[in-house]
Amino acid sequence: SIFGITSVISMIVAGWISDHSQWPRHIWAAIFMAIFTPTIVGFTLIPHGNLALLYFWTGAMGVGAFMFSTITNELSVEVAPSDQRGTVSGFINAFNQVGSFIAPVILGQILATTGSYVSSYLIISVFPIIAVVAFAICS
Image (cartoon, rainbow, N blue to C red; front, side, top):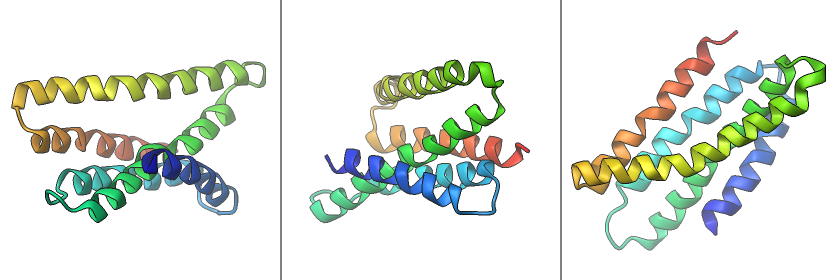
C-alpha cells in the first residue's frame, strides 16, 4: 500500500514540478529517473528486521518507480503529430505496464541465477541509470 500511495502522489507532484519549472522536461525525466536507482539500493540493503526502514524504502521505491512516468508521457505526446497523440499516449502507457510486469520476471530470473536477493536487486538498479543517460542526452 505504501508503494502504491507514494507512486500515485509522486506522479502528480512530478507533473506539477514540470509545469512550474523553466527546465526542459527531459531534464526532469532524467532527475526523476535518477531517484530510482538509489531507492532500489536502499530497499536492497535494509537491515533484517528494521520495519521503519522497510516502510521508508518501500515508499521511496514507489516514488522512484513511477515519478518519471508523468514526464515521459508528456514528452511523448509533445513530439507526436497532433492526429496521433492518443495512439502515442496509449503506446506509452502500454510500454509502462509491460515494464511493470517484465521487471519482476527479469528480477526472478536474475535471482534464480545468482541465488541472492541483494545481487539481483543491485543488478536491476543499473537499468534506471541507463535511462538517466538517455534522458540527459536527449535534446
